[in-house]
Figure 1 (cartoon, rainbow, N blue to C red):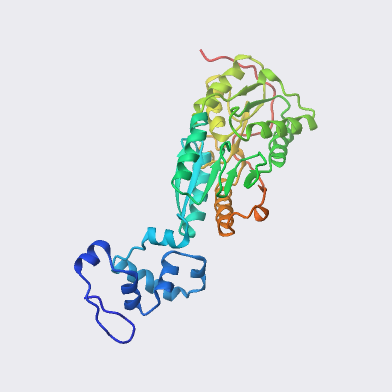
Figure 2 (cartoon, rainbow, N blue to C red):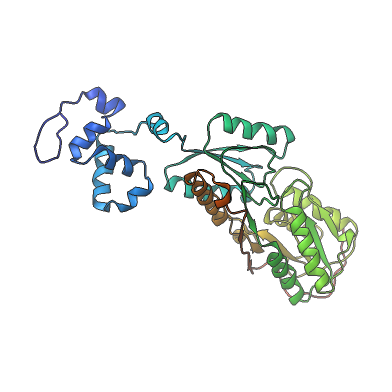
Length: 366
């Protein structure tokens, strides 16, 4: 029997199949707790109004819902609000740390407000960049977050682009201050006495490649550092593993020109580059300092621990999620949607950079 707790001690018979299977109805749960169905719905759906309800009351509601196997009716809620409470997320790939950390931040923002998300990877393939957002929109998502993804679609729902640099009406870009990042990175190596610096550029398809390279070149020129094309290599391939950094560093080493530091496009490629340097008989950081970018989770625990330019990736994802939900709540009014939200980088000094020493000749591994 299901006994209401509203002071009247009135009994309500509930079938075992209701409790063990579908669970009780919202009205039955409300009668048991002695609160209105609306109050219970607000708490269980974690709507903004839930913040006005005392925690003790929330705990009673959640405890009773769990005890009697109550589950909110998703489709009924969706029809009432004319929303799917689902967000589409486009990422390039999830093998590396960048997208995964951003996605963690997105999830944190969405789950706080009772939203679910569908994530899809496109690997920078032209067909998937067009196909995936169409599939998301066909599933009635309330908005789309694109992570390091080109926007090749039009949407009546709000769109937020992480690492997006195109000005598109109705799209909010969450971007890093790359000018400051370049100043921090090049400045750190310069202050350590490095003048012969090798560089690993990002892939052509990455949204950040062009702006990051332009700002690094400007920071180097400001300090009189000559960027040697033979000490520069570009990442190739859509896999997010250290292998592409390893291959890029091998191309630089093949020129047999000495250098005292290497500034990589990201931490994943920096880790691969360190392997190539070690195979060439170069110690990091004693012979060559290596600087990464992103500060992924593995950076601190690599050997040597990686000095890097930290992007607040989790916070960027969280900001993207919060911004999208805010746009949804305002019915995607263009005038109220910010064009660009900029976050600041941070230099994290660990063990892979050190004071420049005499240039050491490069030997090719046998």
